[in-house]
Amino acid sequence: MSRVLATYNIQGASTYLFRVKPKIKGGGRKLVRGKSDVDALIKGTDHEHLDLLPADFSYRHMDLALDATKRPTRRLAKVLAPLAGEYEFVFLDCPPSVSLVSESVFEAADVLLVPLIPATLSSRTFEQLRRHVAAQTPHGPRLLAFFSMVDGRKRLHGDVMEQMTADHIDVLRTAIPMAADVERMGLRRTVVAEFAPRSRAALAYEGLWAEVRERLAV
Image 1 (cartoon, helix red, strand yellow):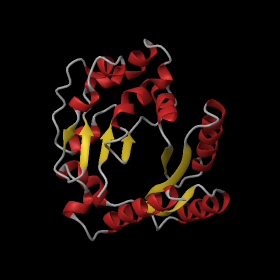
Image 2: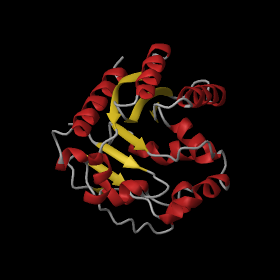
Image 3: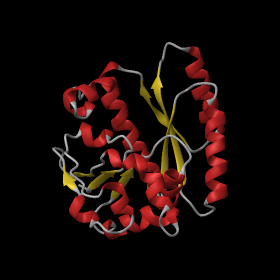
Image 4: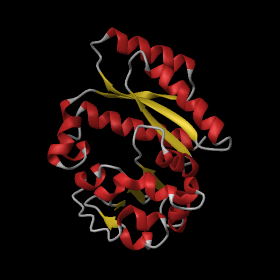
């Protein structure tokens, strides 16, 4: 089985969820300046083949830390470069806004996995992101979007999903339902597949990962 590294969240959500204590001396600023050994900062989790590069509250200043470096949008890619031979997948969990941090993620990533709430503005927002990524990084990451927080009782959700799936080849078929089990992950501090493995949410996440891997193989 491949090794996976989860890294960077401005609020440290993954760090909290996987019960990892950051203890990152110098925080994000020292990391992006190349003064920390990224490999030494990685922690194991309770899940086999899944490691984590913890975040702490200092990561809220990541934009400022990047801005103080040369070629700031290329810093994350440089930081992660030594890990290329150790992990098959590295996930960068970035904030849902266009900033210097997200621009750095665009430069470092091969694929952007974009969650969409099936609402009227989702199509417009996704189009804006597609144009922005194409304009900023012509040879940049591939976009794959999926629907999340889907309420099957709402006709609008179904209509938006049907239209966007028809219009965009880069919108995945698998959708994550609005479910209490998803919210319970924060309470249980573990993945939904561990405490509710046969739930709709767990099966949906499993299907989403299978579809993502299938798309990446093409």
